[in-house]
Image 1 (cartoon, rainbow over the protein chains, first blue to last red):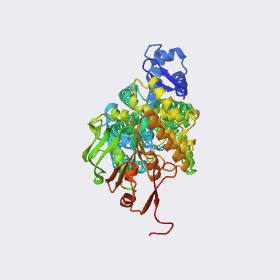
Image 2 (tube, rainbow over the protein chains, first blue to last red):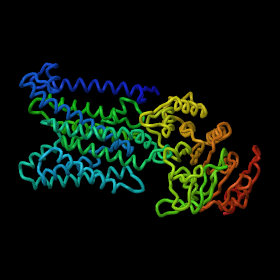
Image 3 (cartoon, rainbow over the protein chains, first blue to last red):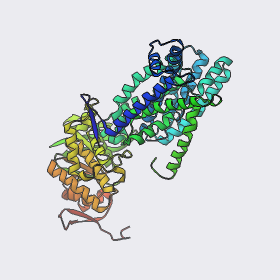
Length: 343
Length: 264
């Protein structure tokens, strides 16, 4: 175990994890720059960077980069990070690589909450929609956890209950859409596909605000999360207040996922695959929160870039794109599990 | 002298009471074995001793103080537990696992100190795992894996160590290997050890103090020679047995009184 210690904070991490994290951070910066520069009209790098932070460089660039590309790319980064983080927490808490908010019904519940909010209150502001998504996700999560609870949280029951509740939530969403007026319904349907297209600085603000509050809370409990992977008894014996730590972490995971859904609509598979890939590249034992978040950001931004590069008639919303890429991964996971390998 | 004791502790899960008001005192600096038939409540008692379960009546005292009034982390600095089936995270190395024993000594912004490093090194050394500290735990043999878990509990650096069936699932050589290790920790490091064991022979050889339970009550407690008598074995295990001196150590050796197929 090569441990790296950083200064007075005494943050200790594996050297490899730290190095991989730096590489991911570098890749993210490069991809972010690329996404500002590249598009239907290319912009010089320096102009693009200036325009992205609000320094005027000229009319079309100020708008294209400052109001279109930058918020879109940052939305992808923040939502990707949220999905990666949320998935990492859930997979660690349940010790199951299939547990991710889009699989166990939480994203569906968030979607229902958001659509119901649009139906009942109207799409007044993103903050209201986000609150609706959070309420929907919390309610769904409470229901799923209640059903899955039997002398403790049983992972398989959690996943089955989640899939069932997810279907119910989707049905409720569909019903709400049939009852909306055509304009709202069109909006809701477009949003339900999951996309970062047309996202504004408002979206970035919502995602950044929620992440700024919840990410420190999650990181504060990271040691508890890692210790609970050894079983409740072992964690308690090591001085972890298992009940409260699990509650806080599950709540954070649900709220983060709900915010992601509120901002971009449900985008599948990022939350499922990011923690797994992060584990593989860092070769860490157990959950790796920051690498999972970085990986989610990288994947979603990359997926959106690839989706944008497609010929105009093939341009897909990123949600459909991630699903197309994620499904084979899921099949591989199931195939590996069925061969008795560790999953 | 005792640092850990119960007074009339009634312990159970939900509405089911498993342990019916027991008084035990764990002697300091000694090895205590808790024995009894399956379902007698020995593991339940052990869990209450380390605060994993709260007694519905009576108290568990750690250093004379109600253990439920002591903060979780503080308890974890005084009493360590090796649970029956802990889970090793996939891909974790021996040293990483052992390092997790330091959890109760760490804080969020001050995670790793020279003292932590020393405790881990010493735990690896005591369990003869230094040479394989970078091996992945999943790939170890059962005996080595159990030593790694014991090393993790050692690194926790608690004066009291509780172990729930530390030798189950191990072959006979590895069972005695673990027992010798516990003996060594007790004699050289003055650790107080409490273990739940099934093998009476091991309990008699290695423990200084034996607590025999049946149906949630303590039937007898004392030195192995006082507890392992033919009458008590009958009372606790419903087994007709002969008690002979162990030809090697002279400690009591319990042998069923019937041959194969007899006495039933």
